[in-house]
Image (tube, rainbow over all chains, first blue to last red):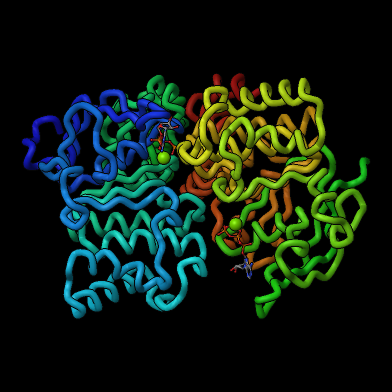
Length: 280
Length: 292
Ligand SMILES: Nc1ncnc2c1ncn2[C@@H]1O[C@H](COP(=O)(O)OP(=O)(O)OP(=O)(O)O)[C@@H](O)[C@H]1O
Ligand SMILES: Nc1ncnc2c1ncn2[C@@H]1O[C@H](COP(=O)(O)OP(=O)(O)OP(=O)(O)O)[C@@H](O)[C@H]1O
Ligand SMILES: [Mg+2]
Ligand SMILES: [Mg+2]
């Protein structure tokens, strides 16, 4: 992963620092080093307050780094105008209610395209396509606040992906969703990643979903990236995880206790690993 | 046996604007010191049930209620919201809807000040709450620019500070890091055990509930379809599947192993049980001593 040239990287950070300005002066990022190749499906995990949302806001260009290097799709995103930024990187807020502000579901999705100067026909077509894909078409005339929390979360994603960003950052997209809805959202992200090659960065506290969906895991601790790697490898680093307030999914913990190798991280993998051990 | 703190007898609720009831024929009791988990898929009526217990329904949200909702033997319909909130603390699903003071410190203190507690007591209560939720460093911060998980910790702490007899939690750990979530649920267990608080917690982390709750209630389409101890709850796969809820990962693994012909006399539902059972199978001599 370290060998990729800058042009192949979705995100390149070196010594990245960010401080929330005076009077608060909180140093949220204290030297982040990170390389995410284009087309990756990565999860950002870590303790509350470790800097995940702050990093996401920097990558999406909402916050300007205080010090250090940050290149997103090979540009310094915070220098771009919002319309230029939107096709490179999209950020879905931790709380969808901070992002939805139009009177109708349809308008919330059309808003970004209008700003990009798309033609009415293009807008009509893209908005319909995205709303259908996210199962919100029947609700297009409703006020966003008439939707359930789960629908609002998908609407917030719709409003961003309609602009077809190269990189999509979603901040805790499954909060408040039941397991079935959470999987629907993750399946959607997986399809965008697979079909359109969209680079996905998802922030989450749900390790079961990390194990099932992410190909790369980035562990934040106290304003830095403490560790990154494929889920199976990261979930075996007990000590680093403990200080990052992460516990691996129960099946991975079982695998560690029983010394199963390779480490199972999903239920079917655990079953297979145990059956293999029992038959020898 | 102590009198129940909460008693519902065949209660149905229909929101004023809704064509049909959201909760149907709900009956259950919670004793002092009991920790009851509520599980169900989205829209099954979990928040509505908590609003009902907190008196938000019907005092704040208009709804038609049939049947009795009793808190300490008094019907909530006949008590004012202020009276109910002396005994019942509700932590909302969305912490931002709950925080309304500028400073974290004030958010935690205002409930105590409202109750006219002496300053010294407020200070000591604040100190213990801040450390309970590991937010000592946040006390002078402005609530609206905290991180998501930090806001949730403050919302929990604000209710903990007033030490209500009955705690109602709506997805209290949805934005907490995994170890933080496990700690909060374990700490809630201690509130019930050592201080005889009654706890009703809506939570989708079944793995954690099974470790700490006395009973789990499964809601499906506004009805209670299962009210059982952790083991029985996890083993009713039929009802869980129908309600769109999964049991613990270990219960799922048990099912898969049993399907594949592995002999597990009592299907393990927790990590500890699974470890003991598999050690027994993988290494029988050692397993017996570990399990025993
Ligand atoms: N608007 C803000 N102003 C000042 N400080 C902030 C602001 N937003 C976040 N912080 C602080 O910056 C640090 C990092 O916060 P951030 O929101 O990035 O954490 P996070 O990893 O996303 O946490 P969580 O898991 O709780 O969402 C924390 O100490 C937080 O209190
Ligand atoms: N104020 C209201 N007026 C009318 N209907 C409502 C109101 N609040 C909730 N409902 C409806 O009642 C049902 C149950 O909602 P409730 O919020 O209790 O579900 P929940 O189990 O808490 O779901 P979630 O897991 O998504 O939070 C839903 O169909 C919802 O649309
Ligand atoms: Mg965050
Ligand atoms: Mg709810």
